[in-house]
Length: 103
Image 1 (cartoon, rainbow, N blue to C red):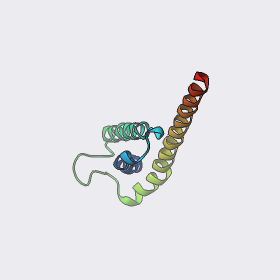
Image 2: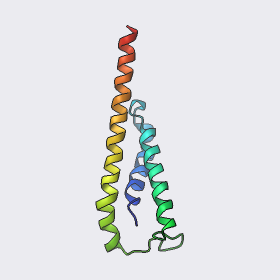
Image 3: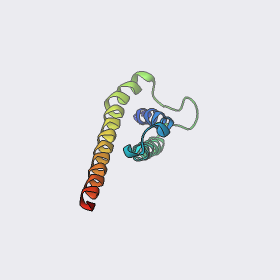
Image 4: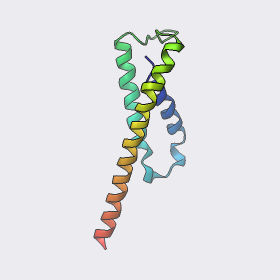
């Protein structure tokens, strides 16, 4: 019901600090993955009637929402961070390889 709230909160923070993070970390990749996941999950939850477009927005109460956020939202966000970290590491290794090959 609200598993998308966790990556949504994270992407708001990462978007806000985006200009302070060096470009070599490709924060735009992370933000794109997080925003895409949030949009996809929000549409899916709206389509299934779990989220409505009028207050209180969620069709479940907080005691039902918190466990889903913890069990699904947090691991999903961590997996996105791991994938982003691997992507950044591969990009940096490729950049070093290009510099080494040019010498």
